[in-house]
Length: 214
Image (cartoon, rainbow, N blue to C red; front, side, top):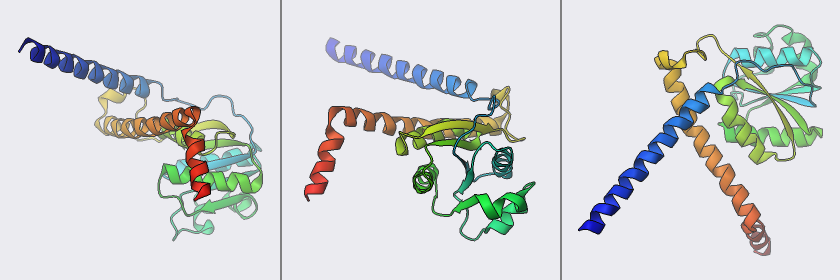
């Protein structure tokens, strides 16, 4: 009986520690989201993830400022064409015809990473400016690092007007968005860490060899 009670105590203590770690991690996640992108850095290419007019407009501005050679807009709805997008942003008609590519295949952030990987390889780019919402940037960088470990990523977060990055705890909509994104971020981080551990242990190479032999 005493041993059973001890096991319950250990389980409860473990659950409390896990809860503290998760909640503490969330607060750290929310408070470390960048408010701005700092000093602009040049790169070979720019990738903007769809999800808001502000993201595309900021990416085109960076292209116009000469921060990169070419822009990929990833995750575009198949029914949307370049003419529709270029009319939404300043100087769109100047840069879309020559220097902007649309990616229609991606359905989520993992898909954005795969789509960007193919695009970067096709153009020989080994450095990319990544443009997405500030709350979405941590998960995006993890997924992009998984897909393109040898590509240098320059984060360029965008903060929309309805996202209250300051005093986020006082705004229910922002709080819900952050919680949802934090859960997805933990999933992406877990997959990334698992792959790195498996690769270091040699499991990735063995699986690859086995697949080739079959």
